[in-house]
Length: 136
Image 1 (cartoon, one colour):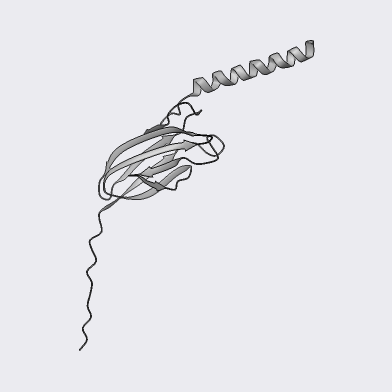
Image 2 (cartoon, one colour):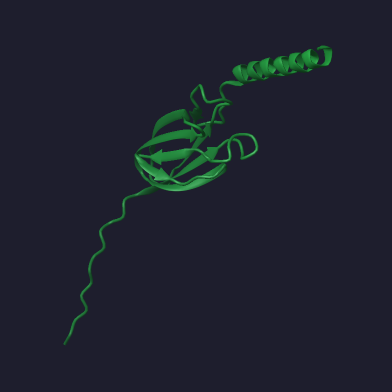
C-alpha cells in the first residue's frame, strides 16, 4: 500500500506591516517617486500610503529622491513586532541641496526658505531684464 508522504513546511517567520506614506505628489514633488530600500532590498512605492508586508524584527528604511542626481536622503531604523503596523512618513525636500525628512508622524519638507529666496532672485532678474529692454 502506497502511503502518502507529507513534507512538513518550514515555519513562516512572523510578519508585520510597514505603512509608508510618501508625502507629496507628481505635481508637488517629482515625476519619479522616491527610491526605497528596506534592509537593503529595493521596494517599489508610489505617492501616498504604501502598505508593505515585512518580516517582524529590525527594519532599516532608506529613502532618496532622484532627478539630475541623488538627493533627499533619509533613513530610519525601527523594530516591527509580529502583527504590528508601523507608520512611517517621508517627504523629499523642495530642492536638491538638502536631505529628506522621515519619521513616524507626518514630517515637514526641508528647504522652503532657500527655494523661495531662489525664486525671488529669478523674479528680480527677470523684471530687470524686461525693464532694461523697455528702457533701452
